[in-house]
Length: 291
Ligand SMILES: [Zn+2]
Ligand SMILES: [Zn+2]
Image 1 (cartoon, rainbow, N blue to C red):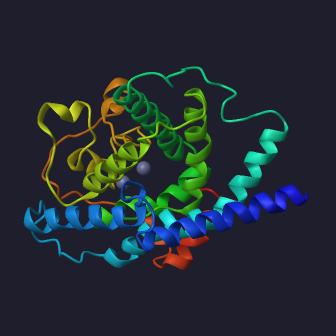
Image 2 (tube, rainbow, N blue to C red; image 1 turned 135 degrees about the vertical axis):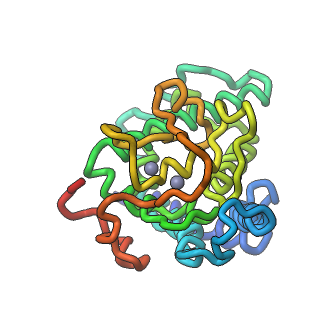
């Protein structure tokens, strides 16, 4: 019991300290997600201001500040709160013989760095794509994912407007992905994490980008806008589930981009029932599932 208590406090204090040090620039710059997130946000916001897709959309669009708060909440505040729990789980699983190294299907520890990063990026993106499909498929999960789909005007910060339960849903499959790779992230994994933040921001940005023929590989704002469409094609529970890569949607036939005007209605039928405030959304989703 003592061990678990220690693991909990160590996890909690460790993450708190790391975040504080990041704010004070006391960590290596390439692992500074606090300021990294701010810099990427300002860059993408700058692009939105310079090259707006929907020109009538305000620079401080609807829910701009709510989404800005969500960015820091999901990335840092919630991470601190949950870190103790994860440490306890790690210890529990370790005690019954499950460690991050117990799968290790691909041993890529001596591959060249670039190929390690590529495999890490592709595998992690696939498990997240799959998790995202599940969030739409099952109404119990969809209840929580509605928070992300309550965005009515799209802009970069909408990327990180999502219910804190999603952090928990994504975790098992992400951990599973890392276990397949022998339980470790490549040393330069921060490149992948920063790339994922930038692509995710761009996917939600008010900028018309499709990357030419690369649209079949990379997710983009036009494709992701249709993921947020109020009206879905008949018989589908969702389209364009891609996170960083659009590839999976093309492979599994879940892609749908009928046009690229950028002016479609966003949300989902019934979205007026979702609480408007952060606190309301924080406790939303635990009641009766309905679609
Ligand atoms: Zn979704
Ligand atoms: Zn989205």
